[in-house]
Length: 127
Image (cartoon, rainbow, N blue to C red; front, side, top):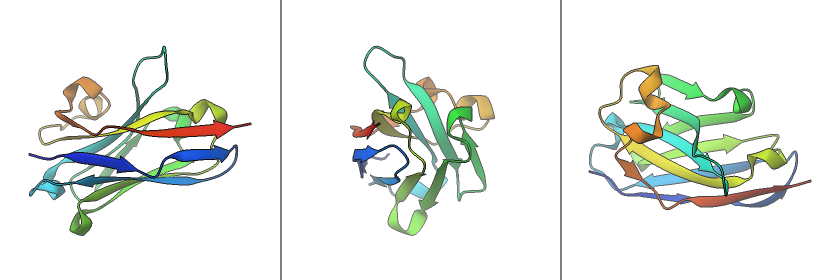
């Protein structure tokens, strides 16, 4: 259905901002729930944020609420993660994910429920 390519990661100092982008190749992008997950070495994959359909519903993990914003531009087949006030603990590989069948708040937070994943982009936040 879709292929996903993340970009926008990098090395920044604490307090800085980054905007991650995830470009999708699918023909029905606007119908997909899109999620961002992150993973650090030795840690489980962690849900970060998700957005449904045309952006009507968004979801965030508690640790990023008020700092990160997920959005989508369906005309560009792209989902974004605006990350402000970055902290060293935000350091991780960030992955974009997509699924057509997710409906509940629990499902959109569960990485195991997503069918499509990007390759990841590294975000490193220094002190």
